[in-house]
Length: 201
Image (cartoon, rainbow, N blue to C red; front, side, top):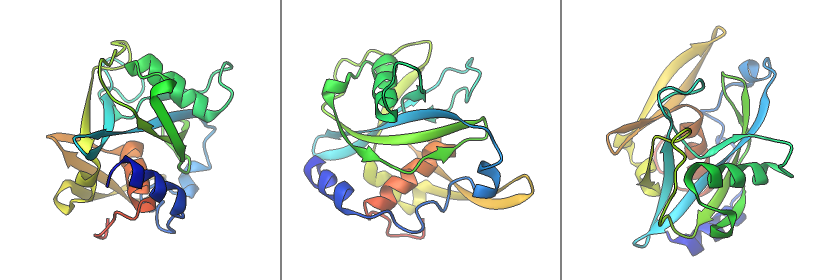
């Protein structure tokens, strides 16, 4: 799959019925007052292969310290839309400005236990040359081939419980790193939408 075929798949594929399988259950999510936020799901073509770009948060941050995630943050008054939020935060965190990003659309919003409602904005990034990271928000960045997330050996389903409700979440083990939480759920939804899932997960 290359950037051109990705665009066609994203726009033509309906949302699969089981795409929210690893999202926080509604019985948990609706009981919180959430703050609106957005992330960019940055996809870049490297040597003919599609990669997802990730950042890792510094350990001293209040929310999700050390966690691997997509660039993004809270909606501010200067943002006209959730897409604007994702693009602005991406420019601030890693120095990729909106003129280098082709937005394909949004995936369904997801919730976190820390009180955020996150809108994933999927975008094709022209290149990742000369990234300028903000050390106050980003410790480092890396890419992972998109198809690595459908390799069964990289996927670990885990049973967990919140507010007395048991449910299943995903952890991806790639490049000696663990990707979990809402980020992992967003990846699963993206792979579902693109019709990439060939296993149970």
